[in-house]
Every structure is written in C-alpha cells, then in structure tokens.
Length: 198
Image (cartoon, rainbow, N blue to C red; front, side, top):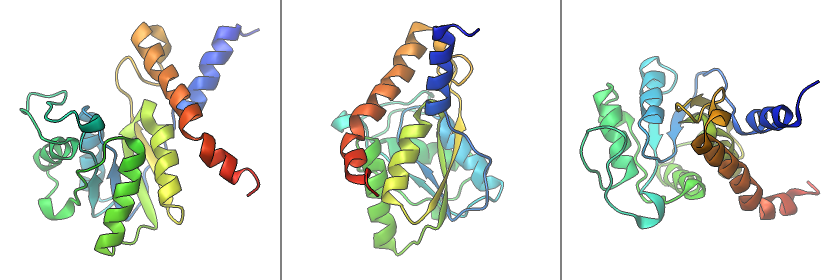
C-alpha cells in the first residue's frame, strides 16, 4: 500500500510536469526566465528542423531591471536579451528569432507573444513550448488560452533539484513545485468559472 505522502507526490508530479515529443511546428515559444536551459533546448529544436522561428519572451519579473542569468554571459536588460544571446551562440540566426521583450510574468508572455504574432501577421497552428519542466503546466495553460486555435506541444527540460524525479527530495524543490500548484490554483479561478459550462 502506498503512503499518503507518496500518493501526494505522484499526484503533484503528474499534474505539474508535462513533456511531449516534439513535432514539426510553426514556431517555438520560449517564456521568460533566468535559466538558460529552455533557450538551449529551443536552439536544439530549431537546429533539428522542428520549426523555422523561435519566439523568446520576457522583460523580467515585475520590472526588476538588469540581471544576469545562470551563465557568465554578462548582464542583460531583459530576459529576451538573455535568451537571444543563448540562441545566437547555439546557432540560431537573428532572422529566425522573433523577439518579445515587454512581458513581466507568464500570463504576459502568452498575451504579448500573441499580440506580436498578430501584429506580424504570423499565423500559429502548431507551436512547440520550450520550458522548464516545473513551469510546463502553467505555461502550457496560458499559451493555450491565448492561442486557442493552435496546438501547443510542451517540450520541457528538467532543472536539477526541481525536476520530475527529484523535486520532492529537497526543501527548495518542494517549495518551488508546491508554489506552482498554488499559482495554478490561484491564477486560474476566473478562467475556470468562466468556462465551467462550456
């Protein structure tokens, strides 16, 4: 018989962490952050020919300003600049990058990416979502909300200590992933109410 704690870990893991096999797509979305892994993954997907365009998004959390990511690449004005530096160094040409550098949080990543695509006349029918694995459910939900006509395919990368297999082994991992559960519950109340009868 499973312990209650094991059942809880399994339920949280299955809900928060989503990852699918990549498919041919119109573009690769990369929601903002200070960890280089999603941008490296996006570059690999681009270089393997899964999509012709990469769309990194992000200014930074709530106007924090200049920051350095998890590399020694220097200091950047925006998360988008940080990701573009990585994409470029990984072989993605500038003409294949569509920049969104105003979003301050995940919902805005999706909203402003949609606004940018509409402004550019870029139709998205299928998109890969290159994302940290613990952020995959929330990012997938927001991009799905603002690109309802598109198929969004999350392709996620584990961050050590916050991955599918090890998040519950450290206090920091537990706090981060349970924080995602809390954000999912709090941020989608209105959306669920509005869609309960649909």
